[in-house]
Length: 90
Length: 106
Image (cartoon, chains in turn orange, yellow):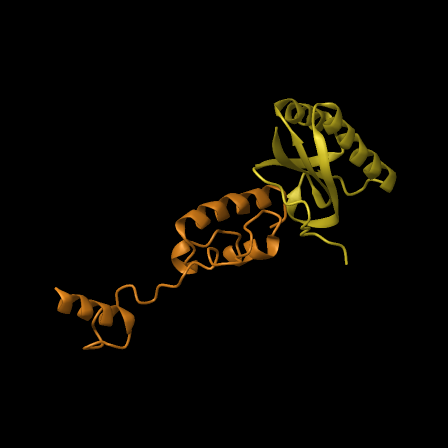
């Protein structure tokens, strides 16, 4: 059992540890959520400069797959973006 | 009692006197109907992202206050009749951050 565990850890830690080019790299490009770090900016409808980062040029909300925002924060983001749109800030 | 934030967008073509009177009018309405105003902010004349009732600019006034359903009902009633206001938004908060301002004049 111990040996198996070690092998698994090595694989997940190093992304260049591949046998061939066609091997799938599962979950190696995952970033951490930028809004749930320590001293993260406050998600609020008044904080327009932050919200503008998470909408496209057409005013659509960008999905969390691309921005790697966590599930809870993404829900809050959509709420605040919609509030800002009501007031005509975005 | 809970904390609320209320933002009002007034028409662009009003004189400064009218805006002052609007600001004091809603301050009184909140204070009279069992509420308490903690802070008033003026965001000034901002360009709207899209046209609202054929206006391109609006004058923003922001209130932070404490109150209950009665205060909210009073505000909603008065805003509905008021012709000089284009749009409004009230948001409930558990805690209010009174110090930070996002729209500061330079």
